[in-house]
Image (cartoon, rainbow, N blue to C red; front, side):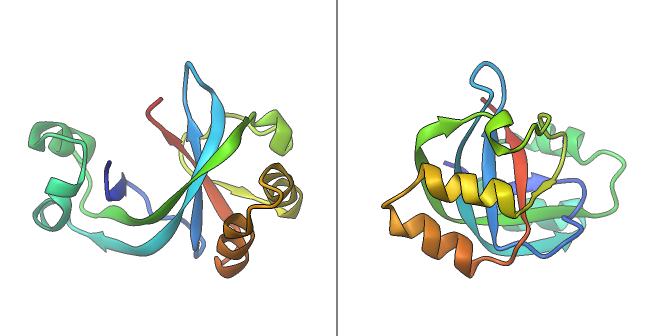
Length: 139
């Protein structure tokens, strides 16, 4: 399991939780994680600090950040799996994200309803800073 989500661009808004979208073939929202912090730094610094915490080789890391003077490491906190997968359509006709898609209150209500009776989602999402991004992740 990786401990950081690497991005070339930082979220444009403060976030406290990240909703996870699994790409093809699953193509569904599978859960979320609490954000333990976000670091923006030179790619070489990110590699020194987090290289062992990623699922990338040094070559893959360098290729991903090629041309970037800064990169982003979103620290993965507690990971929560949804008991039932949700489609993007369930959350309001969203398209698969290429970066961050910020969810509104209606989508968050669907997430809460899909996890009814599970207080951890309610506590986690309520404690997190809205809005919440959806990230595309390897399927």
